[in-house]
Image (cartoon, rainbow, N blue to C red):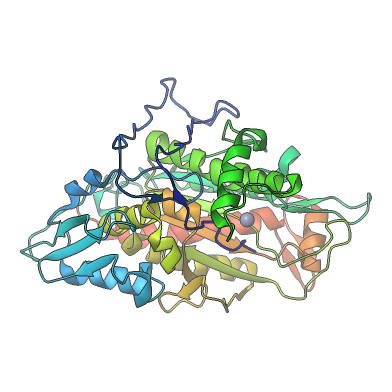
Length: 451
Ligand SMILES: [Zn+2]
């Protein structure tokens, strides 16, 4: 289960406390070059006339980065992606993004309606225009030479969800039934899955990087470093502007800033600045509310869904950084590649796992495309990783069968589960994902003409 969106409209007075997000020194990411990452310098204007709205630990958007996308998208392409994928509804963009025949007028700062970024649409729709991006769509990959290796030349980063290890309890992705049972920890499960998946993808020819290869944080910051930010967030969301909060409240807000906001933003820097893959696979296991982690409630349901980025609510769109990050994805046409990838992986993993599609009931997500497993939702990871991201949520960790399969461990071969013989849960997950990518790239690259 994903927690509700964590971003709050957060008017911060300037000067902004820009968080210093540094890539990890622990653990050493795999295949990392020796040279340090050149962190993108954020040139904040010395003074802005209005408060800036940022998501938690967000950075000031540099709107000049959108200049490179001038005249690269038609009105119809822009409007279709915005309304069908990115905006939760029409109210989400009203007054923030206005569309006319010539272009889009995008408010740079929510609090300052007169300051508008003018995006010109492509005047000649038939003329090709390739937007700037580090990732390559399938037709820009080197031609396929070995049909047995349909992922050759493709760079894939695997992002095992959460941190696990010593942090599993702090991040709340943990339960254990008595000392005789193995604990169920999402971070550990995601990493085990990632190792199987890396093997499968490499056999298919892909160049694979793991965003984390141990159960430890990528970010260098910890909860204790984020207490001031936690206090600022609590103050901003307090109706009376209160500045005094119980210690436990500050600690739990700082914990969340550490293991979600800071951790995922640090992973984003690794991905966007160092790995620059053609796609990212975010591996998670779902769960439903389990109550006390030492006496968890089991649920009879066991299901699966895949997310692409989209469905920004009004309050998310009002955050200046989120609106900017959404536009980067839209202008790079990421959704057009993310959706067929998500559908291919949904088809194969639903076959491998036999799981039913999950149906959202709230407004956090919206149905996208005809595949019953695929939804659009705005999560920090699938927003700030600026390339196609397939975000996977199979299996319900507090379903009894899943608990039993975790107890069975990562055995080799097949074992009887219910009425059928199955691989261990981690390899079943990994095999399903790899097969989807194999099917997709085999199909699209078989017609690939050299360019
Ligand atoms: Zn998760």
